[in-house]
Each structure stands twice: as C-alpha cells, then as structure tokens.
Length: 172
Image (cartoon, rainbow, N blue to C red; front, side, top):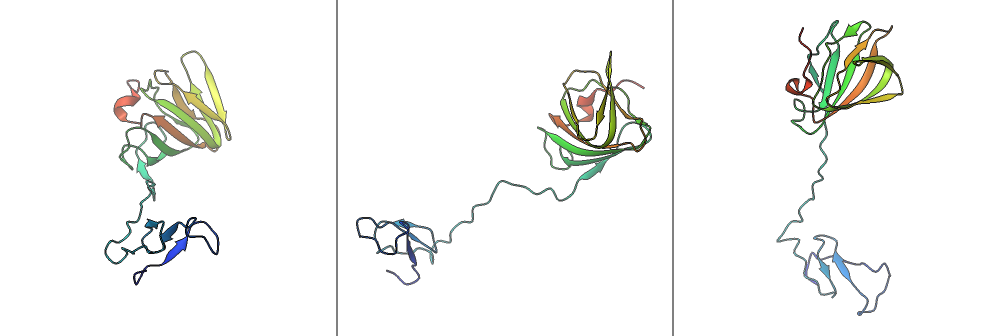
C-alpha cells in the first residue's frame, strides 16, 4: 500500500478472505478488489458533487394590479429566479382589494393561508377560505378580490410562470 492510502473493506466484515474482499479508498473513493490499491488522492482531488438545489433567500416584491394595493412576494418566477416554467408567490391582500378581471394564458393554483379570497367568474362566484385551495384553468375569465374583514394571505402558483403579457387583463 502506498503512503496516504487508507483502505476500508466494503463487505462490512472485520476480516475478509482475499476472494471476498472489495476495498474503497477513504480519501479518493477509488475502488479496488486488491488490498494493493494505490491511492491517487495526492494527484487528483475528489470532485465535490454539487446538488441541483438552489436556495431562494428572499422574494422580490412586485407591483400589483388593483386597489387598494396588495403585496406580491415572488419567490420563484420570471423576476426573482428567472424561471419561465412556474411562478410561486405569496400575496397579502387588504380588505377591499379588487383587481380587474382577466383571462390568463396560464393555470393558477391558489392556497389560502389566512382570510377569504373571493373569485368571480362569468356566471358564478366562489369564496375560498383559509385552508382551502382553488384551481383556475387557463382561458377561464376570473376576477380576484378580498372584500371581507382582514383581507387574505395566499400562495399562488402559475404554470407557466406569471407574466403581464400572459395575464390578459380586462381593459379599464
């Protein structure tokens, strides 16, 4: 064994027969079926495998349509993470907030965390309470509002990601 090499038997036995033994170097991770493994730790540093996860440390606060103003905190989307496939935002809407109607070119999945979110459609209305969710498919005309005391806080997920060009708001 070369200096710097530190072999460990993979069979989990304190003693292995030469036929059963399979070894791995504790430093470089190289495998060997023989105890005479020559460690390459001095020549080649083991590459650290990076995970694909990406931390979003904070959202970007965006301007919202409607009055009185609501707060949009985009965590994932075209602005904060440069993601066009999906957007995830937390909305904080005050009592009395109402936005223009829209016929978006994205599916919107909404989970109400606090309060009540009111949705108006062409021929019906819906109240979504805290702990409930609603799915509005693309192409469906909808108008969001929070008329009740305390407003609402909710998470909105859009597929593809929200964009002013895709929302298709009614003309004022």
